[in-house]
Length: 229
Image (tube, rainbow, N blue to C red; front, side):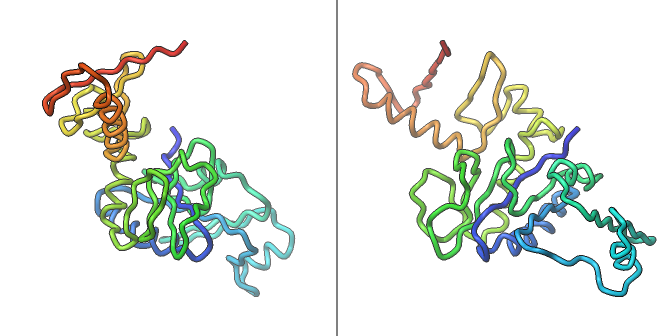
């Protein structure tokens, strides 16, 4: 079973690392084991000249590992794919990725001092972390509201197929007590984040309210069925 991943993207110096640093203890406080995968666009140095592991690398070792009673580290001296790194992180519940844009992985963009998105596929974005105004219909969270970011991550995590939290089980059974918008595909309930429910509610009611003779009231229940041809 693959570990769920959520990726934090954004321009350089937007504050991605600082946000993740603050988010980790909050998520751990909620009972999650958290791993982090950072993508560096520059050359980096993990080892130190003169150390035994550095000497092994300089001698031509393709990979070097070191461990003691508290820690372990693995240095692979060749390019490695995201999926390989995902497997290497081992026994964690959730991976926070920084700087990775991976197919199928949802993203949270961190913006600071600008309004143009770094993300090339905005439809993957769960939210934008910024104090700036953004034109896209995305949830916006202040960089200082780490608790709100953690709540968003937990809501998303609870809706993934790779966990068995009570909320996910309730949604799968079609019994989400907080939901006033429900989506099913071929009879199967689809978990919805709160901001997605807000978008669906606003768009649907906005269209229906413009139609004649609907009898729409504050207590109305609106049902829409779509069949793909």
